[in-house]
Length: 206
Ligand SMILES: Cc1cc2nc3c(=O)[nH]c(=O)nc-3n(C[C@H](O)[C@H](O)[C@H](O)COP(=O)(O)O)c2cc1C
Image 1: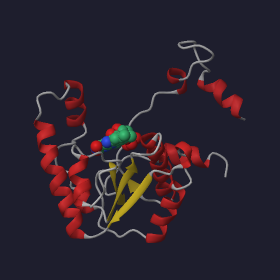
Image 2: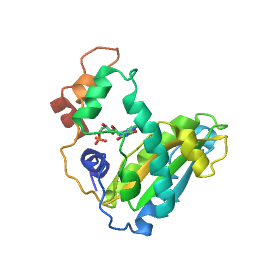
Image 3: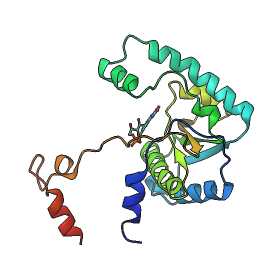
Image 4: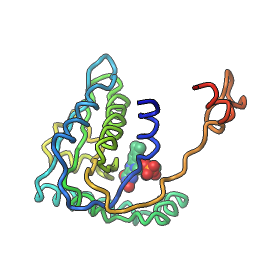
């Protein structure tokens, strides 16, 4: 299917409100199998995934995250542009998606592997697109105090909890956040040299 990956990437957006409809475990494993195909430094495959479905565990994760988020959102060192951005999107210390989504995927990375962070986030990128393909909404939520959540899940000290991904059916519909176009992000041969116009880009790829 031509443009398939592009179409998935284009329609995919972060979802912060979930219905309680269950997710099909086959779809979940399909997405994880896709993530396992990502490249990684020295092929060490530093990623690990914990699928959290247990209501009690989700509740404890939410409580822990919200405790630290309250401090973060109340912090006076938060840059103004960031505080404004959060407010305009209605993002507060409340993380209801952590109990509302039927499944959370906690992603941990082996910090003894080379390029463990880059590699793990690449696999997360693969995961998000595969979830989208199966009609599943997601969010890369990065907790304020990842170690507190890692301890709760029994993650060893040499692993870093990189994010928690709620997965489920979207219970909100919003316009996708705008992206900067090709002409503002791609240079040719030299930094700052005007890139292809979008039209030329299209002509090139056909
Ligand atoms: C590394 C990373 C960390 C993020 N952390 C959070 C987070 O902690 N909470 C949150 O609500 N969204 C988080 N996001 C989601 C971004 O806010 C979102 O991707 C961005 O605003 C673009 O919106 P879209 O994904 O809907 O296109 C994170 C995204 C990335 C890539």
